[in-house]
Image 1 (cartoon, rainbow, N blue to C red):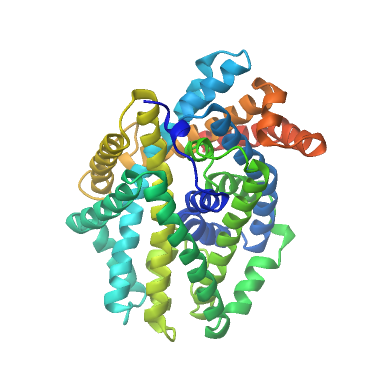
Image 2 (cartoon, rainbow, N blue to C red; image 1 turned 30 degrees about the vertical axis):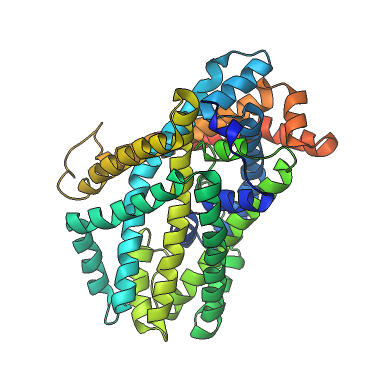
Length: 449
């Protein structure tokens, strides 16, 4: 069977953009960005983050999409094809392999978080978190982590829903899903932000996010901003390479990358305008960390006017972001089995979904009954996250930049990107001299830490 990237193509630029934004926009934007900003000084962090997205995110995404479209296959096939065309060793396929492993290890743990979101969506629908205070919200979250059957049900529901989209294929599944879900996500974000303009706390949130205190910009804030910028846009996970393989030649990679990253950043900032007004209006801690969404916000929902409706809309938005990102991660691995091993789409999807479902059970058990089982001194979830976030992603991104900037012949990359002159030179210089050192720093400090 021919490579998936050779047989399937997006119907239009719009569907590619919606799928790519759906992959890039995930819980990292709506869940992680607000609390990371809260922990690192608000607007000072946002300012550095925007600079990092521009200098690292755009060239990285252009490189990955370019390699996927040029190589017309799954990540390993695409890299090998581009290497061979440039007279280089096809051993560079290992870079694509790192992306595949990153996608697989990330989705195993990510599926459990999406399960939490779906469970909290159910709680929001049924109760609206009425009567929640700080101790109640904390106890609710702790009880959820101890309730293995409940976590399994909601996690596997999310995996099955995602699997159904991937099983149906690019046009029949992914395109149909994202063209409905992504406009819904933006509509909910904008609606909730507008609601907050009248519900209280909005001016404090705007000040927090957009009035920088330059005294807070130091090496630590810069390092966190670089990491968040890189991880939030979804590069080095293979997904953008696969989506690039489905991209018709007539569509501009450079323009698409700018739109995708602009949309991704807009979602992150809108998420701040959704989360922080509720936090400030209720006198809560903006630096509450990972518990901000699951332990802090339910308290705010309980006391705000219209909190029941707000909470339901908020967790629908989170669920959409989580599932569209899972679609991209699972599609990456599914396309590999189609491309490299000749599996039919349905067979490949079933195998991948089955593996993700089985290992997500191990991930969930690591929160309770398997919490003492260690891999290199870490529990299963921490080991998977360390392997992907600290090793595979920064090194994978670094090697993608090195390959696209130094190994691949310039005439091929310029031709595929569809840019020339000053724009191409800026991309090449950034890919060669800015991205690799930045990602090397992330890798060094991540491993050292």
